[in-house]
Length: 108
Image 1 (cartoon, rainbow, N blue to C red):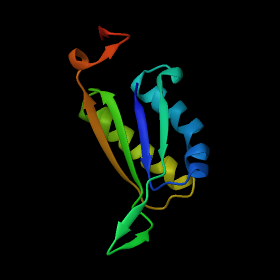
Image 2: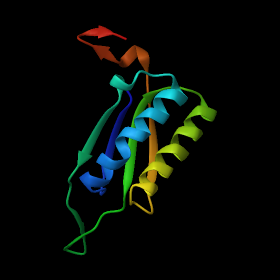
Image 3: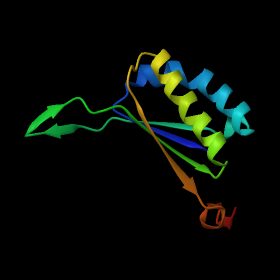
């Protein structure tokens, strides 16, 4: 963990951003690189009956790291996606509760 899910961001952009972003987030949050997972969603977006380009959106599920670290993480994620070719992106952090997270059936 963390799990980074992208919406309306091209696979190639996520691929370009993922390596350097993982390095920086791992250092910032003190999490091993191998705990990061990226999911690229290829959803269709519809407005008034027409298929449209969705707004770039990144959802990050992670355990509480405190507001200062989370603010830095959101800025870092934004910067990496912008550098990779996504000029605008919204980031939403979802805090996971350790007691409600299970790994192989065992509470975390």
